Length: 187
Image (cartoon, rainbow, N blue to C red):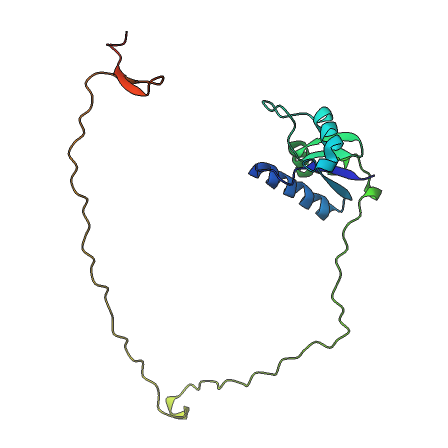
């Protein structure tokens, strides 16, 4: 059984793109064999019509938006159904799969047939002695760094604005003509 995910490769909707990517990532990480079907491709017109007839559109939408998930010809749900099943640990039931249908990806371990490169040992750093007479050379005295204070920046004060005159009467915008008009003088 192959899970089919109906997607739109040319969608301008950022959420659709993000949801499609999340579905594909989850399916890959779980090891579910799946097939992406681009409903925008002209050769997939029949599959797009099939998706539009069998999937549920979101409230307020005319057509169902990708991604839509199917197990062969059986409708499983949309992205939100998929995400809920994934978060509640019911993804296999949602996809109508059994444990044997999932093939977890095998991570290959790097072959350790070649010898590991060894790093040269560090030279031992001289241990400081407890008495100054045992230290070779003159003892360094800490040189005080001159303190440089940043030059104060002149304070920028905004220019005073004259107070705005508020209208004494209520106003409304006449949307049909794009002008302001007095409510009391409205005919």
